[in-house]
Structures are given as structure tokens and as C-alpha cells.
Image (cartoon, rainbow, N blue to C red; front, side, top):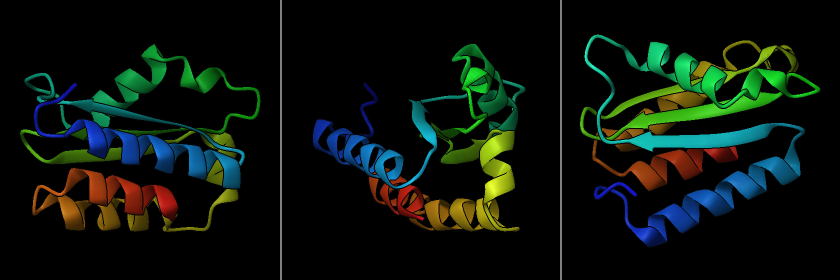
Length: 118
């Protein structure tokens, strides 16, 4: 649990993950932590977590990870090869931009829910 995100916000995010998984073949996870390790940018940390969760081992290579570090308002999204091939060019940039628009105002749940809906 992260003190920046309430239990009700976590529930909203979990419901958005379930909704995304119902509408796509993607296997979606959201990883939220207060701080990323010193010396790592958000994308490097997301890749580390993606692999530690064995998300590259899905049968269809359709894992998607939303990574958040709340203290620094960092965000990264990673889609494995199978899902990356299925989405249009610029899709991940659009997701990132949508999520970060809310993160700038510390509205993490709103940003994640909106990004998961794309």
C-alpha cells in the first residue's frame, strides 16, 4: 500500500485493470512504489519489474506493465512484443501522455484509470 493512493483509489485501478483485460488479450499489471531506486530511471525500473514478474513469459507475449513511482511522479508503460505488434504506432506514447497529464496534479488513480482505458 502506498500512502499517496487510498484504498478506494486502488480499487478503481484494479477495476480498470480487469476492464482492460476483458476488452483485450493483454495481461495487465500495475506496480506502484513510493520511490524508484537511486540511479534508475522509470523505464529501467519498469523493465526490471517486468522481468521479475515473469511478464515476458506469457504465451502470447502480451504482458503490459504500468509502473508508477509516486514521490517523483514517474511513470512508464511497457508492452511485450505480442501486444506491441498489435497496437498502432504511437500508442504507448499516447498512453504515457494521458497518464502523465493527471500525474502532474498528483491524480495517480485518475491517470492510471484513463491510461488503462485506452
